[in-house]
Image (tube, rainbow, N blue to C red; front, side, top):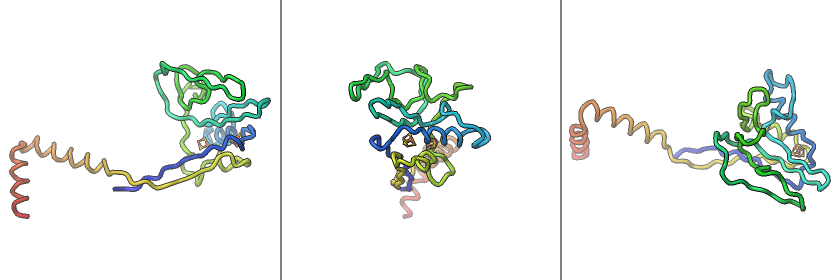
Length: 174
Ligand code: SF4
Ligand code: SF4
């Protein structure tokens, strides 16, 4: 078994005030060169804003998908119906969100790799974004895979029967 770090950003929607500082810092951090510009359209987090109803929902960019979903979702909050897929995290062909505006390449939150903590969390003065880390035990699948590749190579070279005979001789000696 090995340990894996799981990183989570918890979103407290009730605390978000729609200031969009998270969008600004995210786009600046990912600009080339870093901090040379800021354009929320390049941000990996976007805030759905409904000021008249005091509704603000930060959404993080998730996986890229080349195919559109066959089924769609629609939300109604405080009497307002939101557009189809409004809160979806995917960068997908059916909408412009989470795409680099110039190249159209998909954007995905990388948790500000290399930084001590995600910058959107650091810049959210309302504490609507909370960063958490936890360790989880995972199977060492890679090593098992390597073992199987090694055995396959030996079997190809010497024949399966020879490998099986050698293994049973080793077992007898133990
Ligand atoms: S910085 Fe915080 S309060 Fe401001 S929009 Fe982003 S999540 Fe909301
Ligand atoms: S964690 Fe970093 S990359 Fe992800 S949305 Fe926040 S600022 Fe952007």
